[in-house]
Length: 130
Image (cartoon, rainbow, N blue to C red; front, top):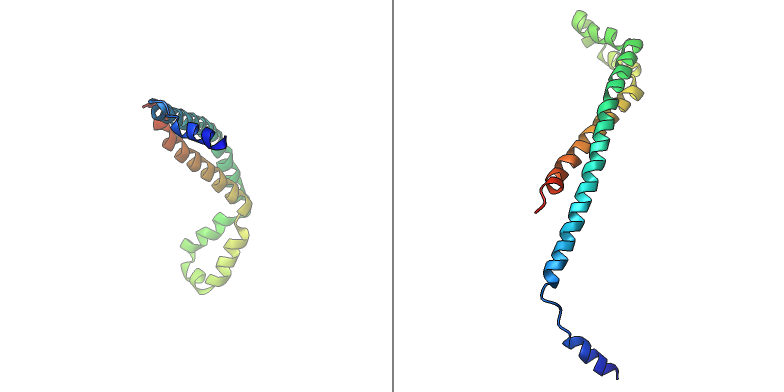
């Protein structure tokens, strides 16, 4: 009994348009995925583009408060002294660097560039339907 059912199953032929229907379904899924990726990356790009301006202001204020600019101007005014005490000078710059603010700024830049990359990759599949 089972062998008869197996033989009947083997003899069943797929429809002639099965390949084209599968291909169309794959294309629809790829289009849907590209569309979602594009709009999500556009939202991320927009948010990070808006967030970059407060991040720049926050970083600028942190640099102003830390006094790092005064230490950096010493390179041009007293270059010989800086070369003599370069180890102490580098540790002084490292200690006065506003690390948290710099990391926030670079995180915003990273999200901006990453979302731009994803958006560019998905712009063609989203708007040019084959």
